[in-house]
Amino acid sequence: MKYDVIVCPECKVNVQIINHGIKSTVCQRCGSRLNVHKLRVWHTTSDLDEAVSVRTSILMKLDP
Image 1 (cartoon, one colour):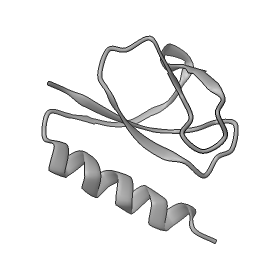
Image 2: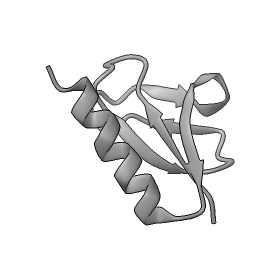
Image 3: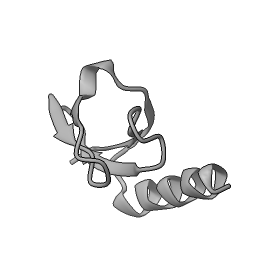
Image 4: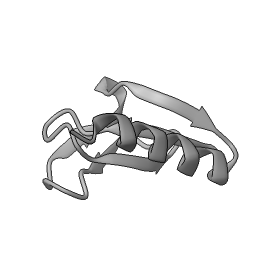
């Protein structure tokens, strides 16, 4: 299984790990419906631990 790391373009603060290849998802923070094909995928990996590490790194950069 592959994972993608994305940032919600609506609230710009929620970083999610989603399954690679899905068409849409909902932001867990603001509830926006996101078309995955239009999103920037920050990282793709088959290692969940790596995806969590990248997500944490991005969250640290977004934290004001």
